[in-house]
Length: 144
Picture: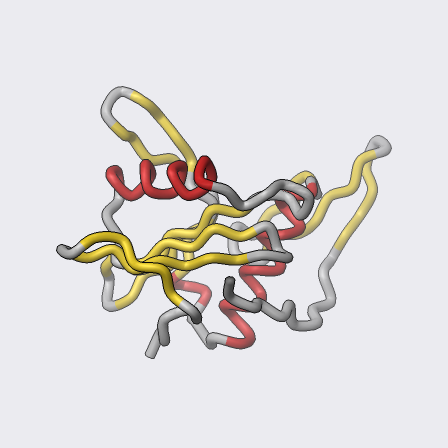
């Protein structure tokens, strides 16, 4: 397990028609504040504030095609113009189990990356994928 201490951030949240919305600074739009979105926004702030990853190198909720299926990844971080880290976010009460890992590994067939991460905000796991297999990491890889 990898500890991910969420940094403080002045999120912009509003209510509209009885539902909460949060402003996604990377997508530059208001999105429905679901429990999974809360985790996604906090992980994004961790990447921006703690890991110092430039916002221009982070893609959020983009569609990918895997065979005939159309799926959406949560977060994809680029390094040197290549996909580097794919993140699957779950809401905080969702267990991080083999199914969650299989999901991000399935997305990895559409966009190959050397690192994947699965998180529910409380529990996070990261893995390196290379020619010898999938290896669990005890910390996130250094971006720089």
